[in-house]
Image 1 (cartoon, helix red, strand yellow):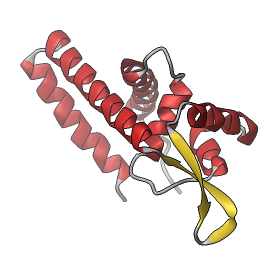
Image 2: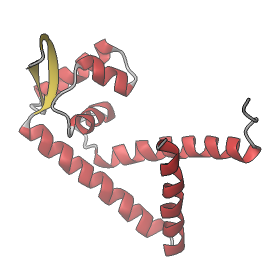
Image 3: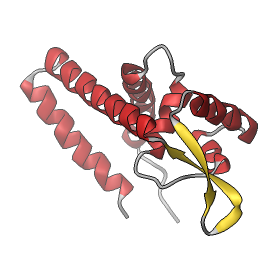
Length: 146
């Protein structure tokens, strides 16, 4: 039987989830130009490094309905950023993959997100605070590895 979490564990859990959620939205917004929604930008980022995902895979990953993701994918295809390909392992399935233009855009957005965060850390934090963030990330990293 597990012991009840300490109050500090409950507080840390709440704080981490809230801050990470807000930070994630800010980082995403840093790379979004006016021509893409945050969901569209997120799909481009998610497709980076993948040979292709189905619309259902993307919908599940983004926490949205299949029909909504289908609309997002159609919009990205209309912009020439993604393409639909037959799954070589199952010809009935379509995989969504980045086009070369989509890959270039996703990489530029990733770089913009990284630059935004580095600039914010430089501008708003002292060296000691940045070192604290680095140490805190090592602690959080332990949580995601079994």
